[in-house]
Amino acid sequence: MAEDSDDTPQDQFLTSSGPMKEWFDLARQMEGRSGVLDVSPYPMQPWLDVAEGGWSVIVHTDNDAALADSLAAEIADKAWSLRDQFWRSERVAPAEAVRQAVTAERGLIILSDTGDSVYGGAPGDSTCILRAMLDDPNLKTSEVSKTSEVCLVPMVDSDALNAAISAGVGAEVTVELGGKLDNIFSRPVQVTGKVAAVSLGFTVDLLDRGVCDLRQTALLAVGSIRIALLDHRSFAINHPVLYTHLGLDIADAKMVVVKTASNFQFFSRWRSGLIRVDSPGTTQSDLTAFQWKRIPRPTYPLDKFADWRAS
Image (tube, rainbow, N blue to C red; front, side, top):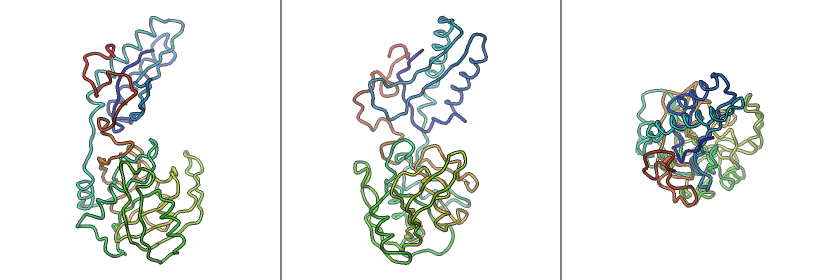
């Protein structure tokens, strides 16, 4: 077993491409060597501030401890050699991200709300990108747009959801939206819109993801923005079914906000572009923005040191 004091932004956690794929590919190659039973890399979730923090790898061999130690050191060396690539992050400021999405020539642009990734533990109620949409001069937000090219935004807010359900379809409501669960990195934004749809319960089989219960949901139309309201962090918050079950056609959308930094595959059928938004939040990619108190030091890239063994 080898341990490496390293941390990396979520942008590079996909094992389908980039440095993480290269690292895991080496593990698979090692498993093809004589006497090697298993090689398991363990990159740490980037936001864990724990005393046991850091990456590790465990190697199982056929009763050959020296071989296991050698391979563990080799794959740790590989991770260390890729550290600068792991630290690369493609992040665009919220206002600029919305501007790029608005001016894109065709297709659906995915806006990745990296700071509010529900699969990483974030609450799903950040208003950062929504605010940028409301402030964008090229987006029609003063009255409900009935044309195509709408903007899709999910939001976990039980108060706003209950207000929309109580008002009923067709009613106009004014709500303080979002920024309630995470009031450190986000704050509520007041919006006035039309209740376009209400669902009092919906269960869907997402095949390999299992059965998902959306419970109560509602759709709030604010100009060209369509805000899907939920009362909990459902897996479907980043799935097209959240919008289609409320009567929307994804093909009519200009952009969609996803509360994840990596799970974009569900919108791949319509996707023409992806923008990783540099949004603040509990899962933001800028790891230097956090006040680390418990992780072991030194840890790359918070500290500079020449060899992972020095940690």
